[in-house]
Image (tube, rainbow, N blue to C red; front, side, top):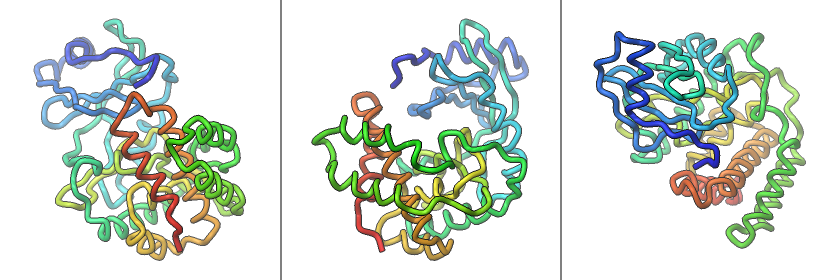
Amino acid sequence: MHVDELETDEALVRRLVASQFPQWATLPIEALPAGGTDNAIYRLGDELSVRLPRRSDWAPGSLDKEFDWLPKLGPLLPVAVPTPVARGVAAEGYPHEWAVFDWLDGEDATTVPLDLHRAAADLAGILESLWRIDATAGPSPGGRGGPLQPRDEATRAGIAALGDAIDGVAVTAVWEAALAAPEWDGPPVWIHGDLDARNLLVGNGQITGVLDWGCASVGDPACDVKVAWAVLDAETRPIFRESLDIDDGMWARGRGWALSQAVLALEYYLHTYPAIVREARRWLAEALIDDY
């Protein structure tokens, strides 16, 4: 899915594990059929998973955030999050750090039914818990959690590049409304930074876990309000909004985050990653609905 994507397979993972963590050398290894956009993911035995960054230009040290913060955030949240277990180094021809996490049972919310009425309340509870956590020493926002304005040029370029594949006039109107919303003037709070169905684990129609905390930081909570369009629908968004008492400015910015991420994902993955294209089209369609 990337021009600079690294090739990984089960044989490579076995060599890395055997040489660096021999206590797990005999465990079965299974590639997941769909990893993330940033990491190839392999199941290691029954209780562990291995994550290898996909791209050659992956930034060294990117694992620091998850290893430092997930053990602190996890116990304060009402659902499971991955627990870092071990950190590997470049070897066997693979150029990056890599990591072992615990295995969380469940299916991602793009592949199994999710009770959206229950999910609206549960997502509000997850975010309420996250926003209550002391953010004093948390990492500053990078590409997520700051104001929308720095995304303007790329978002408009994406709209133009997609041409007739989207309703450019309607998309631009929603985007400009988001840019016009007041910026966040409250204290920074913890945000996940990439909250959508691909990163939600589901069991029996209910959210049981939240994955992929690589974008976590402290900043504007509107970045996570994006989930109202990325997961929910017009019927269940009001449940989510009212549960968190979200004001008009944050709602508009959250809608802008959903729209911008949809546009940029569509432009980037349009011919390479059908699964995320389907998701991005849904985010965009929901963001264009005239919400209350």
